[in-house]
Image (cartoon, rainbow, N blue to C red; front, side, top):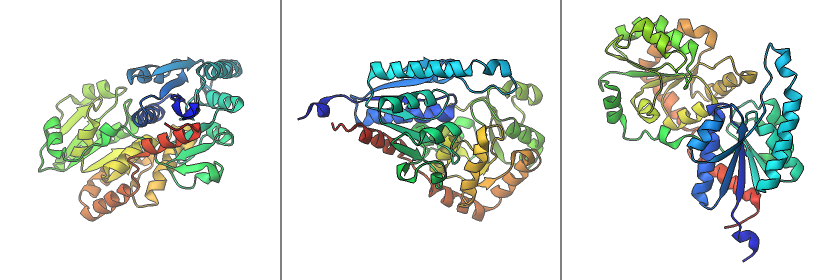
Length: 374
């Protein structure tokens, strides 16, 4: 047996900044270890960003680069960017030289660029995991130097060399989408009635102002319709909403800062109102419930709108522009709750887009790059 067949594989996973990058990265790491427990994994993130806490909490080592993005409206803060970039590339080179990875994975975020660039210089095979339907500037440039690009949407040859693209889907937190047989437990968890229909509003861990304002504006329409509401406000808005409405605003309404059991929230819902981040969409496809997507307009290159419209093209979701939500969202949601035929069509179509084993598929593609067999 050759030596390279015995050597444990070493993988660097780089990126972060938001949960949309971090959760897929950790899912890929978990899949790599699941397939081959001897795999040694190192994360590279950006100092001061959430990956520096979330990755160690998941049980993995991480090294931080002093890298940040362009600060809009502040010329002075941007003057140091070229120096930060050069320093981060130098440190990334040092990390690769010392860790000696067999392959590198970039998931997007500030740290991903310097690490993937350093890997290309050092001749280490690299893979990009592009979550969105519209690739960012950094990934488009780095895509020319990487061996493989794992994507979740069709039409990505507009951004990357076609021969490098593999449609794998986006990795999800498996515990969040495991909803089979949990409906009764979900009603108990949220103290809801099985006899009433339920709307789930979820705007991410930080929250979404538009979704919250839309609910506040038309909360009376929800309560007068005898519909139940699970409303995850996010930590930025929870205190103000409780001050405004009180905790026990109505027997049918549950106001929560954060959903610790996302699986039970999904299980309880008849329809879901959500932003359109790529990771969220990947979860919603597996959950298979009717969805109204209200993309955030405050993201790079408006990629959430592009993500949402790819589902709309398949009649797999209802799309509502952020600027219209405060007037129309709850009305649309209540109309959808009364339309069983539309609900079934949306549910059937979104389920067809699910890629529940994306993490395993991507992990196998990473291992294929290493040229080592176990």
